[in-house]
Length: 347
Ligand SMILES: [Zn+2]
Ligand SMILES: [Zn+2]
Image 1 (cartoon, rainbow, N blue to C red):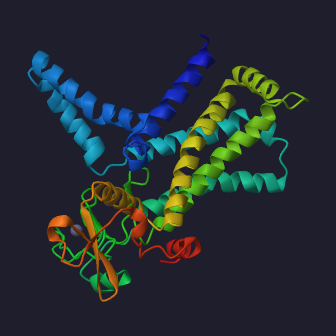
Image 2 (tube, protein in one colour):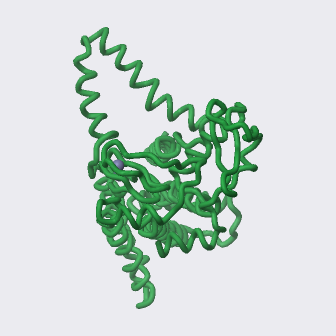
């Protein structure tokens, strides 16, 4: 196996690994090979390593592992942001330095596009990192509490044990940021910040700007590498492969762009699906849990003042009826794709 086959394999494995770690915990992948591999890496493997360590080193190695994994997985840090910055900067530098034959042919408009593509990921990352996701404070609690009603299906009036106030509907306490966040989506390690009601638009901007620079790399270098006249897929791939091995630095950027764009595109599609469905990422987990309870015939439905409410069997009032499917349950936060999208752009 020559160097570039090894390199291609390496980039493919790293991309698949990142995909599994990022998406493997989602409920839609729970019973698939992606979910199983996620549990293998994050649950089974650490457990087995701990048992081995207890036998061989009397638990000394596991103490170090626990401290480092606790830092990586359960504390707020900028390691992933630095990783992102290194990869993007590496690709931009290589493209500008080794892709001079491409950039020499540029006229003014192309340069404008290139500079915009190169600058936007940094700007959008900066905004996403330092934006307020919608932290609930004593000052804005009143406004945050009236923004959304409780639906009595996945959100009930409950007090946050840490912040000591009634959690507004759709909010959640982030243990990494140690605060409650309005319309909590998820805590994102790529921006080292929560994604919530006030900054999800900047998170979308970050994803879109990352995808556009990746696609820019794929198309520019892809066209540059294309030296065949007939455009069959096989001859195109052969042409690309010959060019990648001949121009290794640009080839590296091309391969990174291709694989990472698949990850970002998948994530962006998933986020748009959530907008379509009227969920946040946090809520999609809650709806999936609710669906499992419904399938186990544990959820009952009743109405109070025209409002549909769900309870578990043991708390169900006399007039409650068994819920047969999630289709019977009305999501009051879903106001149609465009209205959902508008509420993200203008919270
Ligand atoms: Zn809280
Ligand atoms: Zn957070």
